[in-house]
Image (cartoon, rainbow, N blue to C red):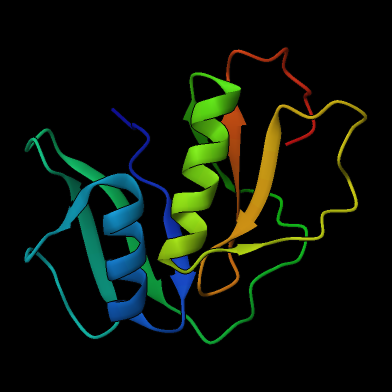
Length: 128
C-alpha cells in the first residue's frame, strides 16, 4: 500500500540545514542513510522520520507551490517562535501575498526555503 513519507527540502549546505531544522523543530539527525547529499531528521522521541534534507544546486523558489506550515497555538506563541527562528538563522520575507488579516508569518530558512509560522487560534486565512 502506498503511503505518504516525509517532506524533503532541497538545501545547498547539509550541515547548516541539519543544525537549523534540528534546532527549529527539536529533531535529531539520523545516521541511517546519511551521506554528503542526504540527511534524515527524526523526532527526538524515536517516533520516526520527520524531514529529509537533500543537497540541491537549484535555487529556492520565491513563491513555492509546496512549503512547510509550522503551527503555534496563539499569537503570543507565534511571535515568540518567529523571534526564536530568526535567531537560529531564518530570515523575514517581504511577502507580497499576505491577506488583510493573516494568521501566518512567512519566513525563509538559511537556504531560502519559504515556510510559514501559523497561529492556529486565528481564523484560517487560506493563503499560506
